[in-house]
Length: 260
Image 1 (spheres, rainbow, N blue to C red):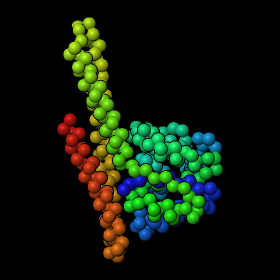
Image 2 (cartoon, rainbow, N blue to C red):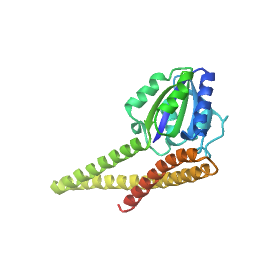
Image 3 (cartoon, rainbow, N blue to C red):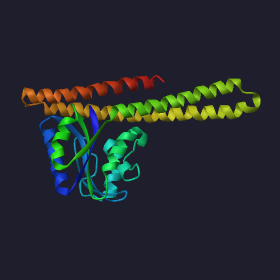
C-alpha cells in the first residue's frame, strides 16, 4: 500500500539516523521510497527545509535552495503535507486541500509537531507499518501512517457526487419553476455544468500525469529487479504489482472519464 508516513524526532542526530534507517529499508527493498523530505519546525508555521530525495523527485529543486522556494515547488502528497504544516497549501499544485487527508491523521501529526521538532515526511510503498515503526522508534521517532490513493479517490468521488446531485436538483427545480424564475435557475444549471466540465478536464490532466508517474515507477522497479537474488526480486515484484494495480485503476477511470 502507498502510504504517507510522517515521523517526528527531537534532535538533529536522531532525525538523520531516522532518515538513514528509512533509506536502509528502501535499499533492502522492504519498502519503496517514492519521495522523502526532512524539515525542522523553527517556530509557529515556520520550517527549515533540510533534505529531499527519491524516485519521484527528479523535477524538484536541489537540496540547499531557500526553504520557501523549495517547499513551494514540491508537489504530490509530500508537498501537500509540508504545505499543511506551514499553514498554506504551497505544494498542493493539483488543487486538493486538507479534506484529502483525515482529520484524525492531521490531528495526530500536528500534536507531535512543536518548535524544534524535526519532521520526516515520506511517500512510500509498504506492506505494513511495522517495518518503518520498528526501525525509527530507537531514535525516538513517532510515526503516523495514512493511505494516499484511497483517501484521494474518496475525496474526488465525494466532490463529483456532490456536484452531480446539485445538477440533478437544479434540473428538477427548472422543470417545476414558473417562467419568472426559470432564467435564474437555468443560469445556475449552466454554471454547475460548466464547473463539472472544468473538474472533468482537471481530472483528465491529473489522471494522465498520474498514469505517466505510475508507469515510470513500474519501469524503475523493473530495473531494480535486474541482477538481484530471487528473494529480493520477490519483494520488489510485490511492490511493483501494487503499482500496476493502481495503474490499471487510473487507466480504467480515464476511460470512464472520456466517455462523459
